[in-house]
Image 1 (spheres, rainbow, N blue to C red):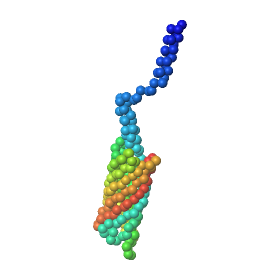
Image 2 (image 1 turned 90 degrees about the vertical axis):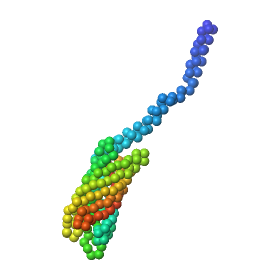
Image 3 (image 1 turned 60 degrees about the vertical axis):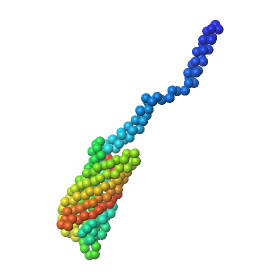
Image 4 (image 1 turned 120 degrees about the vertical axis):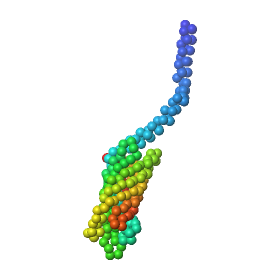
Length: 200
């Protein structure tokens, strides 16, 4: 009986020792998975953001006339609205937009109302760790100029750059463009505008 009691006592001591033993530290084989997890999460987030399809944008700002346009008109204002589409898995987007610019005449001349419609290509340069994405934009379309009832429809083109901040459900952006309507003397101006983009 004493021998049986000794054996049972030894088994009980071993069980308690095993229960109190600290867990084995993670081996080096687990380290790559731990490091890869946040990287994979960032990549998945970037792809998910890029897969956002259709969006609507609108904004407003100031328009600065250049050259001959600047000689005849003061700084004006602009408003615009656009419909965008992000190309899945690529940092490229398309935006069809309509913009309205108004320039007040210097002196006694007629004010200029300039309406443009264009299709723009956008190359995005995402900085996913910050939520801020600079981008380049270039596009072309048609410009309709109206000064005191005298109207014309001419080729319109534009190019510039901007930066957007991705927020919860929408983006806020600021962009500056060089824009021109190919009238006889080329009506060129620089619209600087801020706006919002809502992903649908």
